[in-house]
Every structure is written in structure tokens, then in C-alpha cells.
Image (cartoon, rainbow, N blue to C red; front, side, top):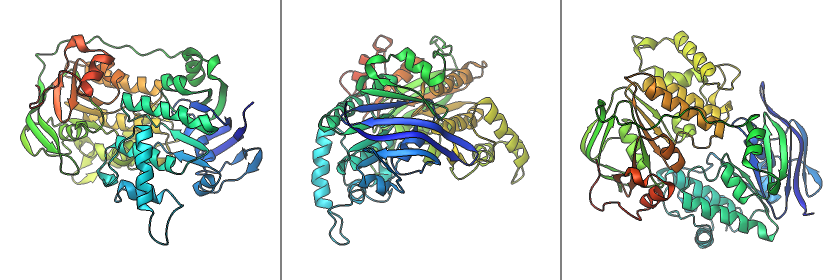
Amino acid sequence: MTEVLARLDGIVHRFGRVTALDGADLQVRAGEVHGVLGENGAGKSTLLSVLGGVLRADAGTLSLRGTAVTLHSPRDAWANGIGLVHQHFKLVPRLTVLENLALGRRTGSRGWRLPLREVEDRAAELMTQAGLTVDLHAVVEDLSVGNRQRVEILKALLRDPRILILDEPTAVLSPPEVDTLLALLRSLVTDGRAVVLVSHKLDEVLAVSDHVTVLREGRTVLSAPRSELEVTSLTHAMIGADHISGPRREPHAVADGEVVTRLRDVRATGPRGQEALRGVSLDLRRGEIVGIAGVEGNGQRELALVLAGRAEPTSGDIEVASGTGFISQDRTSEGLALEFDLTENVALAAHRDELFRSGILLKWDEIEVRAECLRSEFAIRAADVSVPARSLSGGNQQRLVVGRELPEATDLLVAENPTRGLDVAATDFVHGQIVDAVRSSVDGPSVALISTDLDEVLELSERLFVIVRGRLTEVAREQWTREGVGALMVGAAGVPDDRGSR
């Protein structure tokens, strides 16, 4: 039997009136990748935050190598060889990648000076090993979400942890990067380390884990070796029933639908002044879902902002729909004001609607009613609409964003990685809401589904494009497979070099 590096028994943690953990257990053994699964709001991130020193349990015991301990801070956890990579990034936006990496490494400093040279050399080695390339001299606030995730992983690896906890590390990585990272996790445990992997993607957990623990409603409901588990048993443990996907419609032609948004030869720059969109032309028609697939950093972020009216192109012609909803890929920094309550977050979109305004004043009573309706209709787990958005789980935050934006999308919904970090049930719920919005009436909006998740765009799209190096290319129906679209995403075949595609 391998050594138990960490053990959590009967862990209870409350956020005000909400009990996030209600007697959860976890054992982390040396030499193992331990997968942790559960629905959004099941308590996964809270449990791992207790192990990582971010939160203290209200009840229960945390033991490290057989000794009961109390971790007062993440620094205490690091001193005990425990590193936590958060789902939501803990980087200093105004500093460079290298400076952030150096801040995360407490050893090697000389007086007030950071050990930049040593960190740069070690980071270069780790990037080669892990296959997670990032510009060390780029400013973090200019990076895409995917690149920020890479920085967080590198920052943790630089400190050589005995137990490495990763909370949804693959949510914004491309398929090749996911494969490389999972291989890295396997290699990390060969010398007696442990890796704890929190993920909603069952295939990834089953592919890499030695042991799996499932949480539901704050309790541990299953803990078993990977060899004894299968998808059906894990899904049943996570949501209490076999997962059955909701109804999906077959793709259909909408060539005669009203064009609600039109781009012609649009060019746009990225955050560092680089040309991010290069001659993009696209028609979006009412009543269709248009999928746009791409590896992070190929211009899809800029395309989403242009379509949503959040950024101006540098050249080209654009006709943007007036009734546009925008589901941003980063709900914590762009989608929500975390310190605002649910009603105030709903007001961020509802203020544009005359129904909720009286002159320059907002009708707060009506907005509160709208918020309460969304809480009920979208099954947002919150005590009431007065709680801050920060107190919600990631899945419930996303439900709030989707519920707020859908009523605004009378013409166009721009959905940018809308299910990032969501479990299978929450993902199916969001997909169902998007499909229902389109098919609910003959005047349903167009949806621009911009995603790094191949399965998502293949499942929902009626037309499909890839974006590579800022150029948009339509995918022929016979190439609608993971292999075919994947090859186009990395520029392996069929992507023009000097012009966009309509």
C-alpha cells in the first residue's frame, strides 16, 4: 500500500447560510493521479481549497502523512509541499509572465530583486517538458485565457510540489495541449508525488487517474480505483441518475433567413497590436447556430468582441445586430461583477431595456422580479437574489450569465466558450437553452458559437468554420469529424493563406 500523503475526514465548510461541504472525505496517495468529480456546486473546489490552505474547515480533520494539521494560508500549504492551481487565475495582470512566475517562487530572491534569470531558465525547461508554450515577456493582461492557464500551471510546477492540485486545468486548452498535459501528470507521479485533478471531463479523468472520488451535494459518494469504474457508474454517482442528453435538432438549411449581422473583409488588432483578424467575411442568419472552432490565440477572442459590439475593427465593413447578447468565456472578470448581488448583475444587461427604466432611473423592483425569475427558471442555487455572485459556484455563475444574456439576444447571441468548466448536466442545460432560444419561434436569433471544444461545435452547429491565424474558413460537411476539423484547426489542410472565407 502506498503512503497516504494527505487525508481529509468529515470536512464541513459553510459560506454563510450555504453548506458547501457536509462531511466530505478524500485520501491522496503517493504515486497516484487522483481524479475528483462532481456537478457544479458539489463542493470540489471548496474541498481542494481546504487542502490547499485557502479555506479552513468548520469541522473535520486534515492530516498530512499521518499528522493532523491546520493550514492557515496557501503559504502554509506550500511549506508542506502542497500546490494549488486555481480554476480562476491568481495572476498580477500588469506584470509580465516572467515576473508573475518569479513572484510565485519564494526561494532564490536576492534582497529586493527577483531571481528572474534563474526562473526564466527553469521555466524554459518546464515549457519544453510540458508542451505549454507562452511568451515569458508578455504582459499577463494581454494574454488570452488559455495562455493565462498555462502560466498558472508553470507557476505551480516551478515550486516543485509534493502534492499538485489542478482545478479544471484543461478547460481552455486545445486537444493536443490536453494530451501533453495529461502525459505530464502521469510523469509527475512516477517519483512518488501525487496529482489531484479536478475535472468535469469524464474521458480525461478516466484516461489519466489511478483513483477517483466523486462528490455530490458536499458529500463523498464514491471513492474507488480507476480499474473498478466506468462512465455509467461515475455519471450516476455525480448526478444521481444516468445522464441523458436533452433533445437535439438535426442541422437544417437556413439560406433564406434574414441576415442579422454581416462582416466584410474585417480586420482587427489584438491586445499587443498584432493583427488578430485578417480579412474575415461572414453572414449570420436568423434561426441558425454557426460554430467557429479554433485553437486558443488564433483570433476568436477578437472575433467574439467584434460580433458582440465590444470592439471596433481596424478596417472592413460591419453591420452588427442591435439585439445582441454576449456570453463571455471568462465569467469572473468579464461576465459578472462578483461583488454585486444577483439583482445588480441582472441590471448590467437589463438597463438597456426600456421596460426596466424610467427616464434615467432604473426600476429596481422590476429588475429584482426578473432576477428572481432567472433564479427559479435556470435553477441557480442561491438562497435569494441578494447574495453576491462571488458566493455562487462556477456552474451557477454561468447559469446567471446565460439567463441574463438570452433575453437580450433578440437578434444575435455571441457565445464564447459558454460551457467552460461546466459539468455534464450543466453543459447539457446551457446547450439546451441555446438550442431552445433559436428554435422557440420563427424569429429566433442567430447564434455565433465560438469554442475551443470540438465536441460542442460539432454537436450544435448548422454551419461550421475554423479560424486559423486570424482567417475564417468554412468546413465542408464531409469534414465534420474530430479528425477533419482538428486538422483544419492546426492549419494542416485546407486553410487559405491570404484571404478570409465567406
